Image (cartoon, rainbow, N blue to C red; front, side, top):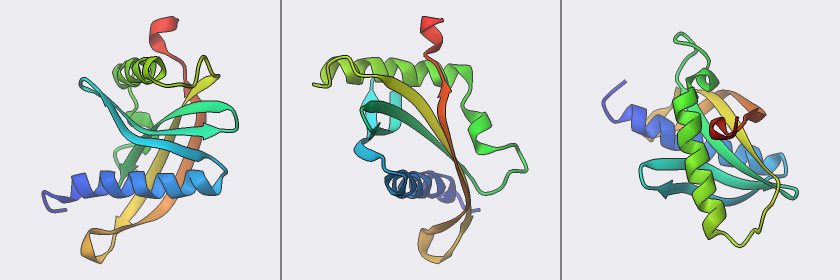
Length: 131
Protein backbone atom coordinates (compact mmCIF):
# COMPACT_ATOMS: atom_id res chain seq x y z
CA UNK A 1 0.00 0.00 0.00
CA UNK A 2 1.59 3.30 -1.00
CA UNK A 3 1.55 6.34 1.29
CA UNK A 4 -1.61 7.80 -0.31
CA UNK A 5 -3.70 4.67 0.00
CA UNK A 6 -4.74 4.95 3.69
CA UNK A 7 -6.28 8.36 2.94
CA UNK A 8 -7.84 7.03 -0.27
CA UNK A 9 -9.13 3.97 1.56
CA UNK A 10 -10.88 6.17 4.13
CA UNK A 11 -12.37 8.46 1.50
CA UNK A 12 -13.59 5.55 -0.58
CA UNK A 13 -14.97 3.86 2.54
CA UNK A 14 -17.09 6.92 3.27
CA UNK A 15 -18.35 6.94 -0.33
CA UNK A 16 -19.20 3.23 -0.12
CA UNK A 17 -20.91 3.72 3.26
CA UNK A 18 -23.05 6.62 1.99
CA UNK A 19 -24.31 4.53 -0.93
CA UNK A 20 -24.94 1.55 1.35
CA UNK A 21 -26.92 3.69 3.81
CA UNK A 22 -28.99 5.30 1.05
CA UNK A 23 -29.92 1.83 -0.23
CA UNK A 24 -31.10 1.03 3.31
CA UNK A 25 -33.36 4.09 3.27
CA UNK A 26 -31.20 6.59 5.15
CA UNK A 27 -31.21 10.18 3.90
CA UNK A 28 -27.72 11.69 3.96
CA UNK A 29 -27.83 15.16 5.54
CA UNK A 30 -24.13 16.01 5.72
CA UNK A 31 -20.72 14.43 5.26
CA UNK A 32 -17.51 15.25 7.09
CA UNK A 33 -18.97 17.65 9.66
CA UNK A 34 -16.13 19.18 11.66
CA UNK A 35 -16.26 20.90 15.02
CA UNK A 36 -12.83 21.94 16.24
CA UNK A 37 -10.74 18.75 16.05
CA UNK A 38 -13.77 16.45 16.07
CA UNK A 39 -15.42 15.05 12.96
CA UNK A 40 -18.50 13.05 12.08
CA UNK A 41 -18.13 11.12 8.84
CA UNK A 42 -21.83 11.02 7.92
CA UNK A 43 -24.94 12.58 9.43
CA UNK A 44 -28.11 10.96 8.13
CA UNK A 45 -31.78 10.58 8.88
CA UNK A 46 -33.22 7.12 9.46
CA UNK A 47 -36.89 7.99 9.47
CA UNK A 48 -37.19 10.70 12.15
CA UNK A 49 -33.94 9.71 13.90
CA UNK A 50 -30.73 11.68 13.39
CA UNK A 51 -27.83 9.24 13.01
CA UNK A 52 -24.24 10.26 13.61
CA UNK A 53 -22.23 7.69 11.69
CA UNK A 54 -18.58 6.78 12.02
CA UNK A 55 -17.12 4.88 9.06
CA UNK A 56 -14.13 2.60 9.59
CA UNK A 57 -12.53 1.02 6.55
CA UNK A 58 -9.71 -1.49 6.42
CA UNK A 59 -8.10 -3.47 3.64
CA UNK A 60 -8.32 -6.66 5.73
CA UNK A 61 -9.43 -7.88 9.14
CA UNK A 62 -5.96 -9.11 10.14
CA UNK A 63 -5.69 -6.34 12.75
CA UNK A 64 -9.29 -6.71 13.88
CA UNK A 65 -12.67 -5.79 12.52
CA UNK A 66 -12.99 -2.17 11.36
CA UNK A 67 -15.73 -1.28 13.86
CA UNK A 68 -13.45 -2.31 16.74
CA UNK A 69 -11.37 0.80 16.01
CA UNK A 70 -14.11 3.08 17.38
CA UNK A 71 -12.54 3.48 20.81
CA UNK A 72 -14.14 5.19 23.83
CA UNK A 73 -11.98 8.25 23.05
CA UNK A 74 -13.26 8.35 19.47
CA UNK A 75 -16.81 7.92 20.77
CA UNK A 76 -16.35 11.00 23.00
CA UNK A 77 -15.06 13.02 20.02
CA UNK A 78 -18.03 12.01 17.88
CA UNK A 79 -20.44 12.82 20.72
CA UNK A 80 -18.91 16.32 21.14
CA UNK A 81 -19.27 16.99 17.43
CA UNK A 82 -22.85 15.66 17.51
CA UNK A 83 -23.75 18.05 20.33
CA UNK A 84 -22.32 20.94 18.30
CA UNK A 85 -24.21 19.89 15.17
CA UNK A 86 -27.47 19.66 17.13
CA UNK A 87 -26.87 23.12 18.62
CA UNK A 88 -26.41 24.60 15.12
CA UNK A 89 -29.14 22.61 13.37
CA UNK A 90 -32.80 23.39 12.98
CA UNK A 91 -33.80 19.85 13.93
CA UNK A 92 -34.99 20.86 17.42
CA UNK A 93 -34.51 17.98 19.87
CA UNK A 94 -34.78 14.91 17.66
CA UNK A 95 -34.18 11.30 18.58
CA UNK A 96 -30.50 10.60 17.93
CA UNK A 97 -28.21 7.62 17.82
CA UNK A 98 -24.63 6.74 17.02
CA UNK A 99 -24.06 4.17 14.27
CA UNK A 100 -20.86 2.62 12.94
CA UNK A 101 -20.29 1.26 9.45
CA UNK A 102 -17.40 -1.19 9.18
CA UNK A 103 -16.01 -1.87 5.72
CA UNK A 104 -13.36 -4.21 4.40
CA UNK A 105 -12.33 -3.08 0.92
CA UNK A 106 -9.79 -4.25 -1.62
CA UNK A 107 -7.87 -1.90 -3.91
CA UNK A 108 -8.68 -1.64 -7.60
CA UNK A 109 -6.90 0.47 -10.19
CA UNK A 110 -7.10 4.26 -10.25
CA UNK A 111 -7.32 4.76 -6.49
CA UNK A 112 -10.68 3.03 -6.25
CA UNK A 113 -11.69 0.26 -3.88
CA UNK A 114 -14.31 -2.47 -3.92
CA UNK A 115 -16.11 -3.41 -0.73
CA UNK A 116 -15.68 -7.04 0.25
CA UNK A 117 -17.94 -6.54 3.26
CA UNK A 118 -20.05 -3.71 4.67
CA UNK A 119 -21.60 -4.02 8.10
CA UNK A 120 -23.91 -1.55 9.84
CA UNK A 121 -23.98 -1.36 13.62
CA UNK A 122 -27.04 0.75 14.40
CA UNK A 123 -27.04 2.29 17.89
CA UNK A 124 -23.45 1.08 18.27
CA UNK A 125 -22.70 3.23 21.31
CA UNK A 126 -24.21 5.88 23.54
CA UNK A 127 -22.78 9.28 24.40
CA UNK A 128 -20.01 8.34 26.87
CA UNK A 129 -20.33 11.74 28.54
CA UNK A 130 -23.95 11.09 29.49
CA UNK A 131 -23.33 7.82 31.31
